[in-house]
Length: 275
Length: 307
Image 1 (cartoon, each protein chain N blue to C red):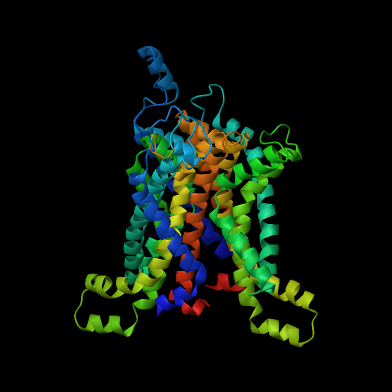
Image 2: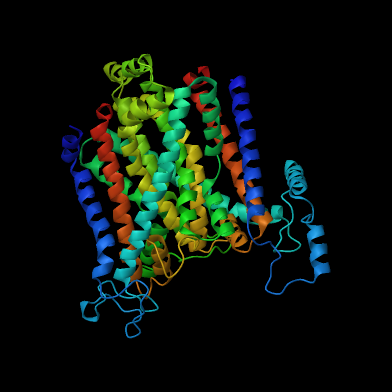
């Protein structure tokens, strides 16, 4: 049912196909290429894209193949997007479901804490973390995940509040299922629709935050790279080598757009009252 | 109304306290101190310097001293620019950032509401689809992609505007940074306005207004736009936060001497007090703005107060 509604949403469907293509080429592509992302080609430094040289996207200022780097950057960007979203997903769902199900004073206290954290300038704190504790990929996952769970917690709590008075929850309670069992077996599975929509909208946000950090030089470290870092490098000498900006920037932009369209489409498909 | 205001104010205090505590202990948990140089300082010099900045005291004493100064609005001396206080650094950078951010906010609001209202009035027609696709692109394209593209096109390609710099604040210098900073927020506000406007246009009181023969202009301007702007008002808080974050990147790209650049410089130089000062300054600013937004929201919509 939901699938049929989604397939009627042309933009979302096209986005899904494009995303799968991008993800596959980032995963498989680097193995098929002649050059690896950190290999220097001294004969072709800063060359424009040309099939004859074997560099389809050109090379950067030290002669690394930009196609290989763009695909490798995509791996990192997508990896950060997915892993950090999973971090925020698990924290947010647990926190929100517990707050919503517990209700009363516990709920009040937990949501006040979210309100307080919500008002913090988190981007600055993430920058602070990166500077203080070094630029480690795991730290990026955790730091970004730690910003994004707040929204998830709020949405999940709202959903839980409306679910916990449904008949099937009462039935489970009468049947002797404990609070943990009810949350795990009855509440959380029913949250999945909302959560899926929200996840597709969180992934691009996370990719954006990572690119933001990398752009400031605080994200992944050389020779590894991400789309944000590549855009930063490309922007530095865009007068002489516009291709170094154009390719990673368009990969980044297309991916972000597709996630947003897909999220919109999923929301329409899973939540008919919005239409 | 007064109770509502007080209640909101009570939430604001722990926010600032959490922020101050978090930044303080993060800074102290970090490996490496502010005076770690390639050449180690002589022990006596080091001792004296640390004593001068209270770094020789136990952490909890330092924390209390810091909080005490904070209550007086004193953010302490800069570790890397001797002779400057953090307050002075903020005072030199903030006016520039404020001008940039304020103009960007005005542009985003005016543009976003106009585009959103236009799209809602043309719902499901070409104008709607065209402007909303553009808005989606604006949301998906980050600042730091838009800014170089704008520079490439308007500064390097056409040569109409300078590619960066901020000398004496000429308007030519401001156009590209303001536009680059405003565009994503403009796009978001357009989508927000369209959504709520579509909802409002379907409601009974609009049908009534039309039925009693009011001209369409009055119906839109008087009856539809005002309730449709409520979500926009409540988004002003997050929008400010987003603009502040964005300004860090924009100031970097256009080499504007604002607070964002001080922050990045301070962060890279381990200038503890500057980084903490800027985070707390912006934190208080955001909290204060949220407070004002909450109040005006309560004033505009009586339903909020009564909850």
